[in-house]
Length: 173
Image 1 (spheres, rainbow, N blue to C red):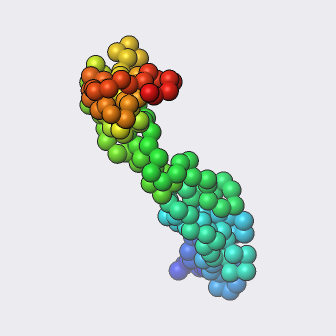
Image 2 (spheres, rainbow, N blue to C red):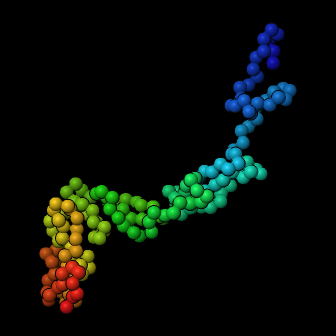
Image 3 (tube, rainbow, N blue to C red):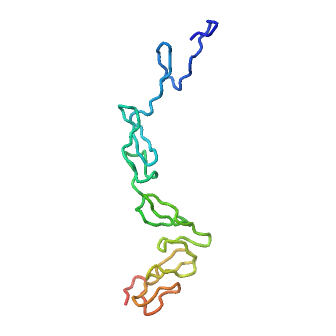
């Protein structure tokens, strides 16, 4: 368009990209299409691809969680864990929820995480999980099964109390 004095051209509007500028009279800018064919995205847990006929995203599948939505493949990523599984990551006990690891409890600096005991424990004392007695090695801060209490004994932090118990890996009387 000419300027008011008629001696220079002046732009009507600056388009976002040259490809969006039309050669119509008067020239105009087109809206960018929302997506291009082959484009993928995750909208929360929804895995979406660009529909080539409408140039709009459409949901192909809703993943079990947002963390499992991945544009690297053609669908959801495999869950790294099964619901209810527990693990330790450093000083944190984590539980699998909807296919993703989530913090259950953070252990204090004088404790360490024990997935077998499903919690934080201070090294030095024994611990029980059902009929199984565990002790902690002070050097490695790892729990290990030391004995399985017999049917007439009780597991206590000091070990099995009552009739004889069996050592780890040995049959119980």
